[in-house]
Amino acid sequence: MLVKVRLKRFLMMIVLFAVIAALAILMIDLYIDSKGSKYLSSLDEVPKADAIIVFGAYVFPDGTVCRMLADRLDYGYELYKAQKALRIIVSGDHSTTAYDEVNAMREYLQSKGVPREDIFMDHAGFSTYETLYRARDIFVVDKAILVSQEYHLVRALYIAEKLGLEAYGVASDPRAYPDMQYYRIREVGARCKAFMEAGIFKPEPTFLGDTIPIWKDGNLTDDGKS
Image (cartoon, rainbow, N blue to C red; front, side, top):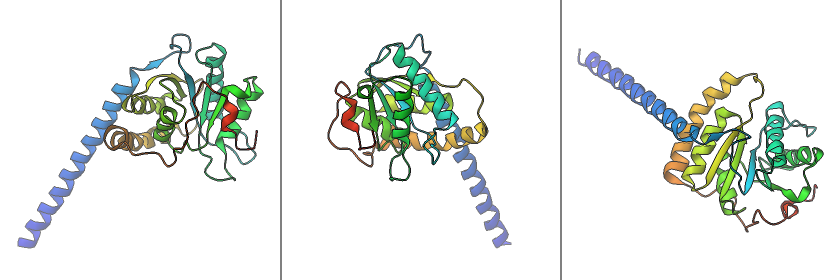
């Protein structure tokens, strides 16, 4: 009898813990949504800034950018063409020689006519948090326009605010994307991580280094592949 009572209490504690955890996750998700959404803007109305920051996404082995990343780059280009900023930072994963998001992004923008000197490559943008931390501390950006799909952009804007960046977001959602439900579910966990990372602990990124101010020449970010 005593074993059954203890087991029942144990199961109740597990259920209670699960309910509390679910409520905490929901509250964090709603909190970040409310904080980040207020900085969303449109291409026409977004204020001018020091730089346009385009977040990386998957690049195929032949160097072709995926559709989602192409849309981000297209919106970044339109913002640049509208002179919302004079520089573009392309930030993504270039942790190995075999996988290189940033040079693919740079080449895409150059093919549209953006001068090489106006494109800054962040080779160590391994996460949204690291991209924004490095934008502030490496590229000396005070005010930025962030470009990504809205599901991700809201979190990026929350992180930017917590890092002391003045940032506005332009969502690059000209189409429906496959597997978007998967991305939205994954985003819930990413927002919880952002809440801890940007809101509480604020760890340094994987790499920092010497500053390369955004008002200088983007060629300074070359790695020999340009």
